[in-house]
Image (cartoon, rainbow, N blue to C red):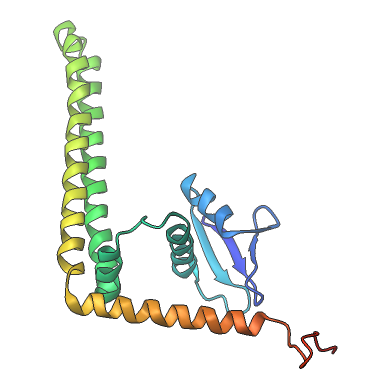
Length: 194
């Protein structure tokens, strides 16, 4: 069962397993450790997992600047959900192929060892190296295909224009938010009392 994180109206996140508030960085660490998480709105029960993960990616992009190339981001925005589904489909098919290859290798090793064949046992060392090479090759192919797909679509001029427009909108919103956060001032420059 997935670990439940509740998001409250004040945007705070609460880890029900740890009975404590948690940050986006904390959620990121849990995901990296392999935890299965589900983030829900405390009032409505709406699943906010994808939105929260997108926030984590956004924060990483702000900090590291370059986690995703600009062309990749343009492509994802242009394609919408389809782009993410396409990438995830390719990754999932690659993972399934890796799992299948691993299972096949494990069965082969068990047959060689279980058969008592001394000659077969001497082949095990070389036999075990082969799957890792196949996995590495498959991973490189997947990476190349994803990169080529993203670059091909992301270079489209309409995508570039839309990203520029969105960047400007975000900048305007940030400026408006900064103005709203400033304390109200009187004509003499002193804060107004409430």
